[in-house]
Image (cartoon, helix red, strand yellow):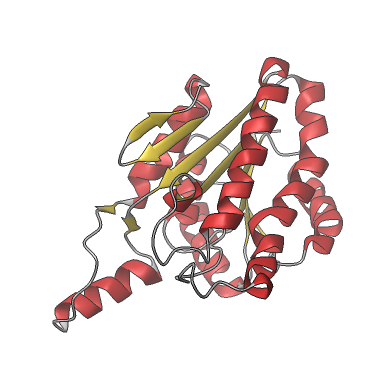
Length: 240
């Protein structure tokens, strides 16, 4: 059986780029996101290039779906060698207006579903003595930014958890890698909205842009060198 990756949050941009990157390396790819049609479109591209692909449309905002989803994944590829988690979480909310309800509502997709997935798929990785848990999230996980409290608190909690997880399992052969992105990722709704606003003459924040393929290459390199557990783009390496 070929190596496999389960891509949770296969949206436009980085999730799709990760699927392409690992498919090129011969991995069987499981695509998981809420909407079926974009997954089917991506699967068509990947299978056309010779990849083995499985499409499992799932709303990841409810952690209770994870046990059933895990069984569906195992029926297709067994326990995956790599877990990638990167769904978009929250929005542009000022700290001055952030409410307890909004913060609470971001936690399931931002953290709880990831916890459930790790509980399902980490034990087989430890038993095999190899595996990888990869995530990508906004750089507000690392630094607090004005108007970013819709995402920052939950991503900071995720970062803390992943730092602890890395320390606990790295010596058991499991790599835990986090990519923190402080740029507008091309081919995403956010990047498209920025470009439309700029074209209309609206003043928008000047942030760097990045090709999602470059970020997928960074994740691949992190996984296969098993060096630093955290990388930020565009700043570079952080953490041990």
